[in-house]
Length: 108
Image (cartoon, rainbow, N blue to C red):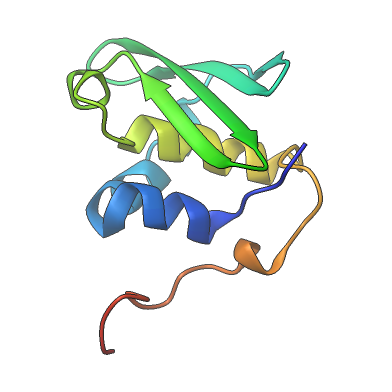
């Protein structure tokens, strides 16, 4: 299984959703293992179902929230990803585990 880190989450979600997702980590329920990732429920306005999968092709996330239903990598996906990292279940650590300090796409 491939691995992922915080920078991968930041790139998929963008700064705003990443920052919001950090505040939702304590709302992530038990992580359930699936063949290529995890599933979890995140308590938001209502309970949202999140599925993260990661393979050599990359990390993807699906969420039942309105933003996620529009195909976006939402704050709930970020929260689950951060919970996976905190639990050490994101496979082998990589340089991508570094906390993003600045927008890598633009000047500081």
